Amino acid sequence: MKKISYILIFILFFLIAGQTRAAMGPEYKECMQRGYQVASDKETDNWEALCVFPDGTKCLLDDFNNKKCGTNFFTEDYCVPEGTNVWDKEKCCNGLTPYIKPFVYGHTQCQKVTNFMIIRDWTIKIIYYPLNVFIIPLLVLIIIGLIVYKKKKT
Image 1 (tube, helix red, strand yellow):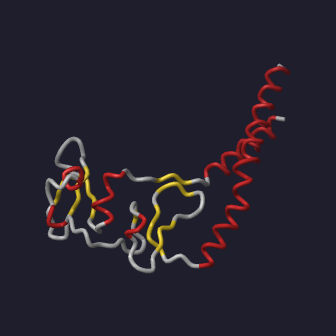
Image 2: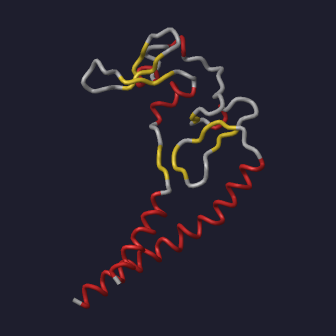
Image 3: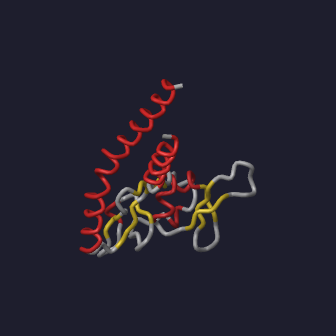
C-alpha cells in the first residue's frame, strides 16, 4: 500500500511539473515591444529595472513609461518582430500572429503560425485537457483516500 501511494504521488508530481508559468509585468511592455533591452540598475540597492536604448543611454522603466525620459525613443510607429514578447496583440509585424503554446502561462510572442502548429496545439489540448480536469483531481482524491485509510488502520 505504501509503494502505491509513492507511485501515485510521483505520477501526480510528473503531470503537474510539466506546466510552465512565466509572465512579465506590464511595466516591461513599452521598452520590450519597441525592441529595447531591459537591464538592472546594479549601482543602487533596489536593483530597479532600466530600459537601455541603442545609443547606450538608460532610463528607469517607470520613467520611460510615463514619458519622463527617453521620449525621443518613444516612437509610435513600430511593430514587434518575430520571437519577441508582445502585450498589444495588434503590434505584431506583418505576417506574424501573437502565439503561445498550449498550457504555457506567460506572454504571447509574435510568430509565424502555420497550419501544422494549429493542428498540433488542438491535438495537445484534446489529449491533455481531460488529463488536467479529470485524472489529476482523481489522483489527488485517491492519495487523500489512501492517507485517510492508512490513518484509520493504525
